[in-house]
Image (cartoon, rainbow, N blue to C red; front, side):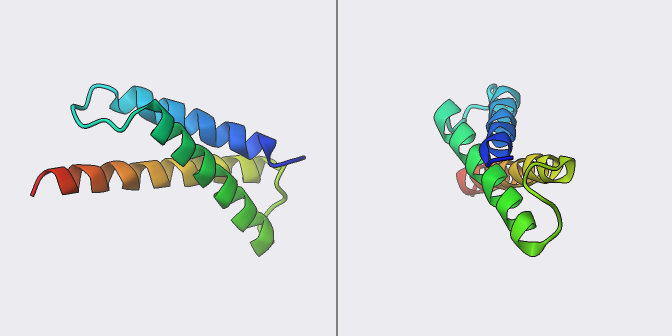
Length: 86
C-alpha cells in the first residue's frame, strides 16, 4: 500500500486535534494542524518502515502514523501554550 493511507490517518489526527483545541483562544488554525498531522503521520510511517518495524500498509503502520501524529500535535500544543504564557 502507498503512503496515502498514513497520510489520511495523519490528516484525520490533525482534524481531530483542531476540533479538540478549537475553543482555545490561541488556536493555530485548521490548515496548520492538518498539515502538521499529515506530515507527522507520513514521517512516522516511513520511519517505522525504514527501521524494519512494519510495512507501510500494515495495521501497525497505521497505528504508528496515528500515534506519531498525535504526539507531534500534543507537543505543538504544549509548546504553543508555554510560549504564550511567560
